[in-house]
Image (cartoon, rainbow, N blue to C red; front, top):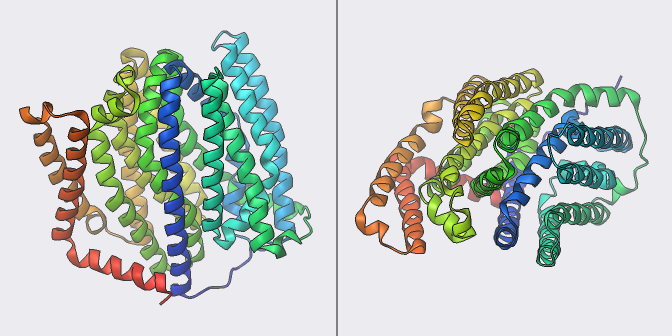
Length: 500
């Protein structure tokens, strides 16, 4: 019988300092990657028609749905074990089998859908290409687990920046030379390849003892990893795939790929807040929660700080994206994509809600309450499917948006209740001041945008004013409502950074 390794319990200051430094560098890395992607996607959007992005979104949905690798949750389970040869070898075998089987399912699925007349042949080929990328690069997964456990995320962030720059440069070059949708497919292929090589370099340079380990397959450990990671992986896949992309499936299948292209461009802009914040909380927050899961006080403090960071940084960004949706789309994509601005107004808010929902998911995974995470994810998916499907068929893309709003609102309520019951953090104390500040900021911003003089200003100046109002009013309200809390957070972060 394989027992779960019980990690040594470092001091509160040590864990906090490691988490804080990793959070800082991961945040900076993500901002850099988003900035590179932001500029590159602007260029690509002006080079490629909406149908390309709609086709890519549809292929991405089906590739993720038929992929078993992201549903086993092996990485969630493996990070809770000590890094040794048995863990790496067992993880490698399980992950490799899942990737090979997934490739076969995706190829079969693509052939079936094209034969049934559901989609074009291009959709199927893109599905196969994306599955082939994973098949070729899955061997770096075990070393990635070792890096996650060592919280060496600052190093991987540097590799990520370099990989993103090279991948987008090649993708843009292909698009300029008529590469079409394949210029978009090339970007993740090159990115993953460089990231995999970078993972090997980091392990050789900073974790030489891991490279020297002899990988071995352990059947008992394999069963344990599947049992522990299955529920978490499935719930994570439901959140990251069905919840995040089911709307793409509905629009691409029941409306058309051109409309999906407009919707996808709005979704990408709305997702900036989600990507920046969720990747940080997910990569650093989860590992930190795992380390303090046996200490209720430290766990509650970790969750409270995660929520505070998401609320404080995310709300102003979401408000700017929503109130400045027309200006953002016009400046970023030009008049061709103005239709996307109406979608962005709603998606900016629902994407931010999802960022909060994922905190409950990471908490349940860290506490090994796998049934809870699976139940919440399944309920979220069920509500989305039940409401969004008929509404899309009847009202088109507006029905899809209505279904997304209903599902996100209920999921946020469930997540808040779960966090409160698990950590005993009261929602009024955790969310109250931010909700009041949000209401005041939204009211003032809305009235400013309705002024006649505002509508006559240039596009850039209108967006600049919206940004200044949202950030300053929200920050001022929060400072007036919770001055002591803000000072306490700043002092806490300063002390942890110094290692005290």
